[in-house]
Image (cartoon, rainbow, N blue to C red; front, side, top):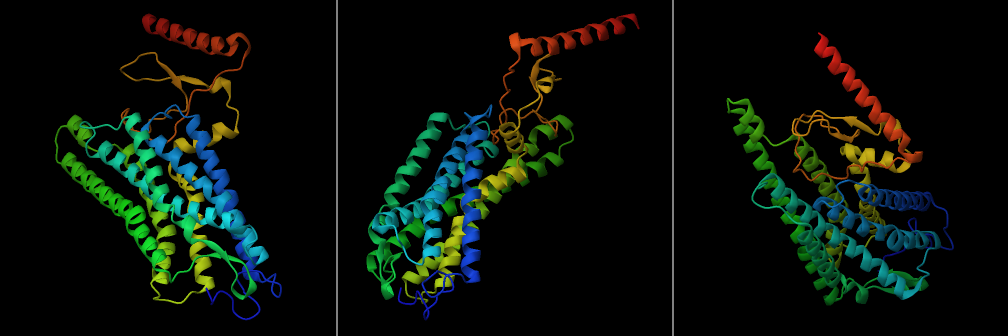
Length: 386
């Protein structure tokens, strides 16, 4: 870490002689945006999943656990980094230094493991929809295993990181030349991070291949019913596309930081403060991207956000559906079947619970139901007369 500062003024970290460079202002602004976006986004994911009618589905368990993991980054990592950049030194002591980088590496490992679990769930839903279905008990056991394993794998970070004082300035760092650290970072890169990474890549490749083959076989069928039955529903493809984009964003944010850590530990490059901060900030960014991805690619999540922030109109609470299996069934108005494929076995991301009416004595419910009954009676009478 001898090359941490250059001269009397670091353009990336504040100091007594240099406290207001443009780079420092941009870094602080960026971290504040990441802190705010990560907090609001992940809390919003938790609220939407909690209000979901499908909050007991396996995918939502993984999404909830992933949001909890990402919530550790803004408060236990980003916030302390802001103080470090502004003050120019680490002012919170050894314990905070150890906790910060422990949770930083833990977030990387847990996120990689949970994304691999999501890809495994998608694999069975798309490739083997009838042979196996992951139960809620199995899902909870898998999530528990991921957390326990990653905590054990990341625990050595509590030993390696300390507050040091090169050039009389306190910083939170580790000695990259120590053999134990080199062994730790290489093992972390290949096992807690790399193994789930390559597993997810293999599962998504297999899923894409299965979708292409099934849709190609469906096009060759002459019977319309069999063609529709063999084709992979569009709803599953949309969810899969969103999850693959989420995984690619995770890889893009974390892989450069960990590769830089490995190369730096092996002594292949010299430490550069600007590169180190850039990689660190890029890894912080991932904690706030999931909610953005859900809002862009999942209509159910957008409707869930509206339900969280906006009080729904009771007059639009229910509508009559035309499902052939259940006539005269009253269901939530915001449940859409845009593609005409009623794929009830699909485990999608959050959808909405029917909200409760707050009218006195259920008056609004009675009015809506009576209007529907009168309309149906009048329509039946006109049909008999004609």
